Amino acid sequence: MSCQPIFIYMRCMHDIGDAVLSTVTLSIRIRRDLREKMRRFQHIDWRYEIERFIEERIREEQLKEVLNTIENVLRGVKPSEEPAWKSIRESRKSR
Image (cartoon, rainbow, N blue to C red; front, side, top):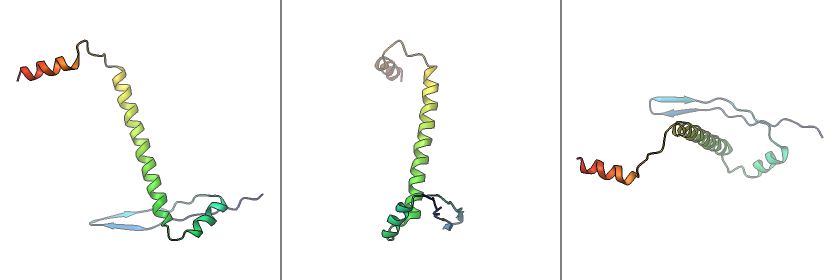
């Protein structure tokens, strides 16, 4: 079974007020059957769908990085000896 490359090309310019966001071309190899299914549903904006997926995945990975950083910082923090409610009450009384 030979594998023929199938490419999706994306290139456009977005004008947002004073800023113009340039885009690049992204080529990906997908299964032939998947490409045929995409052709059946031409009413779907596949570039938009792929872009949304990539943006969401990037947000997930950025969140993982932030959570890992927080986790590493908290590893070095010693738990408080007194309950949190007690500290809050003392803080309120001192106002």
